[in-house]
Image 1 (cartoon, chains in turn yellow, cyan):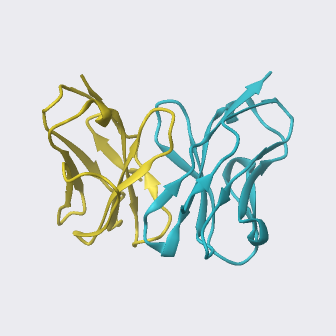
Image 2: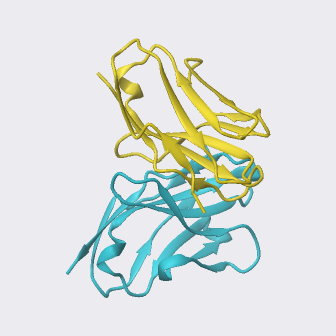
Length: 112
Length: 113
């Protein structure tokens, strides 16, 4: 069975640009969460979506937004990129809200 | 403030030696508890979890963890480390089963031959 997939694998952007990251959950999983992992730190929670509705939001500015589609895939958008947005962005899926989460390989975003 | 603490940033053990990685959390209630492992440039793999019941939980790859309510701890152990265990280990909690994992800063494990 396919695990959580994320695209693209790597991305290089310049300050002020916008970026969209994509995530496909494990088949049958309806909850998707997004995390930001800065080098040398643990992941930080950004968003959780369940059944296409936002169920939780971490302490991130409004430049960060996300959505979940009817097929339960998800996109994370970041506007007006800052150097500090450079990080590994991880997507995780779970069958129902709150159960154990299964992580994808991440998207490495570099902002120059 | 609510937090997850992994006091050891970097640990080096010899192959075949035992391992214990520490994790403490500061929350009033008992959250759901997890240990994840991350190899360089990779995503996170779940090693084990504690929701309730038996305080000693078994995971994959020969790892186990013990929940101690009195110490607010959830330490990860392995009796005999293999070179392939070299990676970064993260403890995480999920308060109120909300699907919002709070991670510690991680412990990097190096294994000496």
